[in-house]
Image (cartoon, rainbow, N blue to C red; front, side):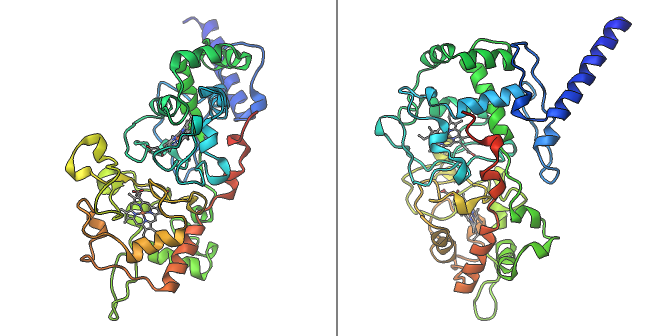
Length: 374
Ligand code: HEC
Ligand code: HEC
């Protein structure tokens, strides 16, 4: 490389950096002259220090154009066979991208077989869906698009539909220098999904616990119950309920599979849904499911893979009073106290609930970066 060319490239890089930092992820940064010059997004702008920068797919760098394309696709019903259902039909921002019904409506009045997951902080996840059957978001998006009871689309038809829409012609060009196609579509959606971050709950301001003044007395007692080991006092009352083993850390989620990231929390004796066991065919995995994050939990009911609990009160009653200790694959952490129900007092239940409610992130659910762009 000779000097002049070298300087030219340095100039471009500097320009790109200034450009990136001056306009960040603002939509108005998107150039409309049809030139292929996607603007890379600095991950430290997206991901908070407290969470750290996750390991992102190296072959799909986040760009302003790619994320925006992914966001358009997420909200576009054109992805379904009869153009009636978008991803956002089942993943609604006001509910932290979950759906307030046990089973969601897909095309032709069909319903999903599981409860729609909340969507945020996915960049920190390595397994997706309740049964942890998919490892990347780019692979994942093809499932709802093609599932007969969700969007029921075929990929050739989807490509044809996208090719007919001017804004997609324009944005595939800008983001990937391509004509609309389903592979780049999956990359764009991966980019958008990776950027969905929830970090502004009071729980996140409190965590890891230095900032005690953030919580009121009841919430603070709830924090001790949540993060306390099970230990019965002289009257047989428990002091802690050990939620943190599976829902711990700043993400309120254990991602390590062998540490409770996929587990059986004692719902059933016989499994109607085999969960992870349906994927691995191993007895030890039957009835185990991906452990969800509890951030925004007050917004994402009904709860569990089948939406069986309508309220957080019911969830707490489950963990306190109704754990099925005979469940064959029960996670050891659930029965560490010798198969004795926690029997939390009403006050303890109220405190635990108050703590779970601090996990709601109201900034997140109205953040225009994730909202419908149309
Ligand atoms: C008809 C409702 C419906 C539609 C439409 C839908 N989803 Fe979902 N989504 C679900 C359900 C139900 C689950 C849980 C399925 C399971 O675990 O087997 C889910 C799970 C997910 C997950 C897993 C989250 C996690 O942390 O494990 C992601 C990501 C996701 N959907 C993204 C999308 C995207 C992107 C689209 C559009 C291409 C989409 N969904 C369309 C209902 C829907
Ligand atoms: C052994 C690991 C483990 C422990 C300990 C644990 N959980 Fe869970 N939790 C899970 C798993 C796995 C699920 C999903 C189960 C399913 O849907 O079948 C879950 C689901 C939930 C849900 C519903 C999430 C949703 O999006 O539907 C809530 C709320 C919850 N747990 C709260 C708690 C609380 C509160 C405690 C402490 C009292 C606790 N958990 C202890 C593993 C655990």
